[in-house]
Amino acid sequence: MDTTITYFEKVLLNWEQSVLDYLPKLFLAIVVLILFVGLAKFAKSISQKFFSKAIRAHSEIVNIISSMIYFFLILSGVFLALQIIGLEKALTKLMAGAGIIGIIVGFAFKDIASNIFAGLLLKIQHPFQKDDWVQIEDNYGVILDVGWVTTTIKTIPGQEVFVPNQVIYSNTFTNFSTFRKRRVILKCGVSYGDDLGHVKAVALDEVKNIKELLPHEEVDFYFTEIGNSTFNFQLRFWIKFTNNNDYQRAMSDIIIRIKKRFENESISIAYPVTTLDFGVKGGVNLFDKEIKVKPD
Image 1 (cartoon, rainbow, N blue to C red):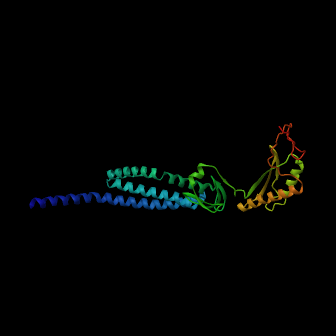
Image 2: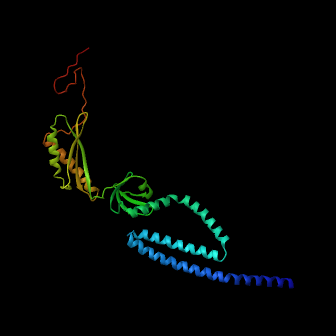
């Protein structure tokens, strides 16, 4: 019984001595932690003001940067406090465990991290914004939202498509709304018998009647090649572009007008022609003369 009492007395004395030894360290660790918390809050506030005014960054980007500074200082304070109270081994194990977990998480979420980083670049550079008409890979439509992980597009058929942000920066994309104008390029061909100068004059005259036409922009007309049965040309002009309907209306309007005007001007929109050779050099037009086939 006396031995047991003596043992407990020694345990209590050792515990008391340990508490007395640790109290100053614990107090200092708490003070250090409080100081780092205050420093973290101050640094977060200063960084928000600095990045908002100095570089005029997006509010979400400013919050991310300031939060990273805040948590870095908080973690620094926690690690320093653990070292003060002598928990270096626990700190080492904690950091080793965090490193292993970080590697596992890194592999699991590398695509998400890539998309988030790409989203950060999109918000910094602003290559497009909400309501812009874009072509990203095979997706053509209007931007609904530029998120941190995906960009949302409403396509012409009416579907909502989510495009990973890293796909956007890994490939080329087109923003049709950047200049608020778009070029209409009509490709067509006329027959060999038409007067090419007259064709050009008629086409250029008809473009003037397009409602969406930008009159201060140049209208181009070029014959591009001599085809198998046509003289091919391109008619190019600029229109005001706010949405896809502007482009579709202008293209439809110029097609209707060109066809009607060509018919009135006796200009033939050519179609493929096949020549049949019945022993006559260069072939013969079926309407020129009657074809007689000799019996065997």
